[in-house]
Length: 590
Image 1 (cartoon, rainbow, N blue to C red):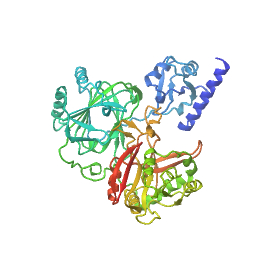
Image 2: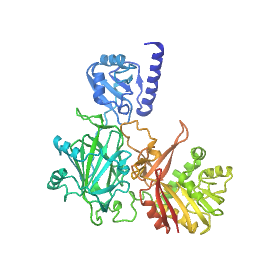
Image 3: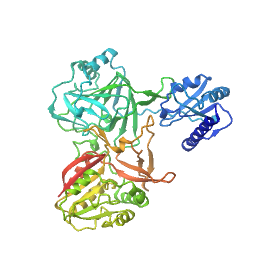
Image 4: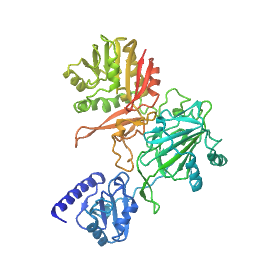
């Protein structure tokens, strides 16, 4: 090996050692030992337990192989130290047949990480029937529900092809339009399997709605709960072709989540709590981390083409389940979460995790916000010349000076952002959106973009909307934007830029960090940037520069229909509502 190549390998190893120390607090050693750190050989780089066993097993008997979810490295331990030395000499820096290059280092045997504990806590009411179908029955169903002829753009979503029988299941609102009966009923070949589920006591009757999803590797579906009023208790998902991990998230407790492996030819039945209180979804990726067939360990499994058959019983009437917080039939506002703090605690939380953060990051934040959103610009351009326009929560003023001959005044709770606006020659003042310093009925139009989602309780969100309505003239219009829980618009099949820019380098997402946010013991999960939201109330990290401390901003991300409901409670009326790049938006009047 020439000197240049050796230097390159040493640089790679040094960088890997720094990452190991930072994330695992493990220091490499020079003295040979039985245990090796394997950089570039983890789940995050596409390696499986079986692949590592093939590579390192050629050098001697292995004591352990440790892979950690979400990490690009792994660890191997040999029974004999001499075999570890042979592996070091034979593998480190060498290009494998697969094209990968692994970089190895010794670690103390006592520093070898323990394999992750596999906990299987399933949502109550979830039933998995493995080998529900024979291979012959699987082939018959695949022939009967072929999605290859699907050409309707509405049915070809971003992450899969979809076909409906009986009634259409509307993704996005997760509802069923009972008034629109489809021409095609559920294929007859499905009937014996549905009768079997009824006979086993898993279903009360034969379903009358079927959705077929055709997933290629890398496809998925965002976490959701089928709207309660749409279908009855008992939703069945039959998997054909490939296994997949389905993720479940408790709708009211971010700490409760589970991943359930659905083998091919299995039937999953969601009953009771698992149907009404847990969101289910499939992360779009090409691999899943699953339990190894040999030993109680984890390994990586490549996905292949999977077809799922989801059977539902269309509900005739309202839902009267016990899960009222999630039930659209039993409440006007469809919100996934209840307030986690009282009003006094909310005020303190907003001061620390909203107001103070924006004061600290104002100039860096401003440098990242320079282009107005097209629909916001179009709204302002439509305002009559000579009108008074207010920008509540104006930030750095990027949306000001967009109207045609109007008098514009902005306000923001951050004095540093207000200074940025002032330096740009804008009329601006420092003000809290809950206490606007404007008289009643003064504004012809106003905008409030990405503001109300920083309010920590439902009452404060309503009060913020009530303040907007107070200063708006009768017949005037206000445009409100809030961040959406749903970062993929299922009606068009497009993900928001926030999600579509993500880099899915790891085979799975690590568990969310949770921070205490008040003296009352309240805590919030820290959202992982550029991933789907798991809960509505979150802390979102902001890092100005490499090496600097991370700031956390509080957000309450809105679910479909929530903004419109709050507008009504604030005494205003929605003229138009829409979805725009990961945000729920409403034009309101009074």
